[in-house]
Figure 1 (cartoon, one colour):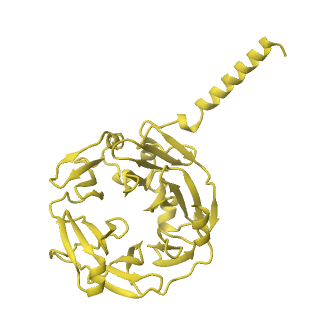
Figure 2 (cartoon, rainbow, N blue to C red):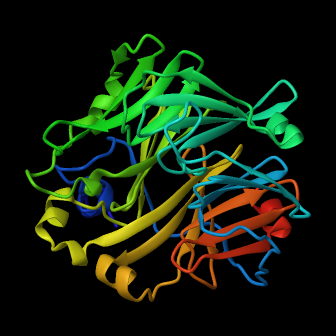
Figure 3 (cartoon, rainbow, N blue to C red):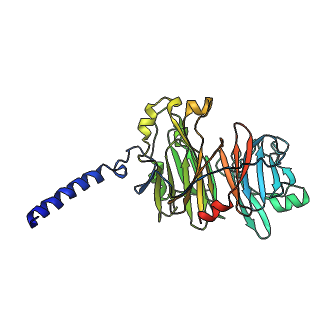
Length: 370
């Protein structure tokens, strides 16, 4: 082969490669897309585990709506108006008492705050505390869980009593900063902003990228519904839409922003709005954050099938805090949420439709994904 022939061959191969790259999924970003410019596509995970050997713990809590594992506790929110939160010890499942009541009193709630989405847990001094956003009344309260359990009397304080009501996502970033997400007046848009203790709002530039998405008039606002969590050490927010096949991971100051598409092509909001509601895909059901990674429950089933007779077993997808895939945990039963007890190496799952609460020993899995 002479030099000229080699040059033409290389040129032809370059054209073919350029054409293939231009047709790759990363180049096909929909115009109506609630994400960032940097997109990574995940269609397989470096490790896949099939969960087996589930056990039903001997826990006597009725009417579970959500649950969370923190330190040596599992906390349940329930529909019991006289005891909205129940506490159980780990790993022996001792009943540690029930607290929070429904009502109009200073430490009462219109409905049970979700322990998985309406509260953040922390350690203050020697005490475990829960910071609870009161969705209906626009308040932030702090429950001293350690003292309440010890005395069997509610230890609660109001940290802020004039916050915006009905914020779809509310997070305590630090003592003076809150993350909020609320709908606009036309119910076509969801706006993220930061709020300080003086109720002054700021909208970082990185938020505008997500806030700019607008639905058609009369469309179901749940299309923009997300579960949002924050990791203090990495200073990153992770947002999991329930009806879109991608997850947004970003820092409030804009130093990091990435969209993780679980699949080979991003969901297009325009195309979804053209579909009937029953035909739309329910993508994700639950978001949990941990020290080294975060996880979501992947549903991937159309709404009609999901609401009438579920067929597709869900999976738990784990990602590190750079948005890289870590592992896929395949389930042998239906669930809607999960959490992990790292002290004892146990994964807990709950299904709100069947009220089934199970646990799996995942010590070996945790060792493999470190």
